[in-house]
Image (cartoon, rainbow, N blue to C red; front, side, top):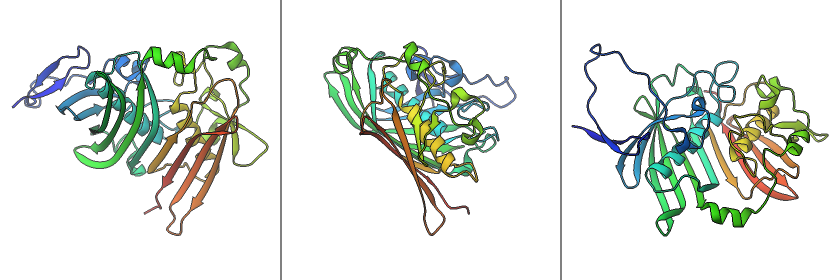
Length: 323
C-alpha cells in the first residue's frame, strides 16, 4: 500500500510505493530538500532529505549526514553534538514551513533545545543506515492562521531502532513584527564587526583546523572566554543576521567544553539549552564554563553566556561514564 509523503521541492503530497526488487534498477542518489525550507544557502549544509506526514501533528523527517564537514565532522572522523542539534533544528524548520503553515520570511526565536544520543554512535560507520526523526508537535499556538509558538518532541532512529531523542520550543514572528521589536541594529555584514574580532584560541585545542571556525578568544580568567564569530564564515553566516545565530552559541559551548576537558574530545551524550535573549554584535559576550564529574564518572559541563551583565543563554552538556 502506498503512503503519503510531502514533496519538499514542490509542496505537493505524492504516493510512495514499496521499493522494487534489488538489482532491477541502480539506486538513485538521495537529494536534500529545498534549502530555503531549512534556512540554508549551501546545499552541502542541508540535512533533511524527505518529509512524511502521518497526521496533523506527527511527521517523519529522513536525513543524510555528510561524511566530510568542517564543523560537523572532527579531524578524527567523528560527528559532533552540534550536528545532532542542527539536525533537530532543520527538521523543525522543515515541518514548520511545509506542514504547519509558517510562511518563508518569518522569524524563529528559539527558547529551548535538547538532545540525547549515545556518543558512541556518532561515527560515519554507525550512521550508515541513515537517521530519521519522528516528530510530534506537542504545542501549537496560532495568531490567526499562522503559528506563533510551537514545541516539538522527536524520537531519533537509526536503521529503524530508537537511539535517542530531541526537543525544541520556539516562537514565530512576522517580518513586520520582528522589525518593530528589533529596529535598526548592527548586522553581520558591518565591516566594523569583522574588524573588532579578537584573536581565536588555537584551533586544534577545540578540534578544528581553520581559525575562522573557532568562536572563542582567550581572556585572563581560566574558564572564561570572549565570544567571536567570523562573519566571513558562511557556515555561521550564510545570510545577513542582526544577531549572533543560536547555533554559533551552541558551537561556542561545545568548544568551551573541549577546552575544559583537554585530555580527550568531549563527546556529550545529551544536552539541555535555554536561550533568554539575543546576543548582539555591538558588545562583548562572555562565555564561562564549569565542569563537574559525578561519582559514577559522568561528566557534565555547564556553559553560560553573558552580555552587558545579563544572562543570554545556559547550555549544559553531559557525557556518560565510559562503559
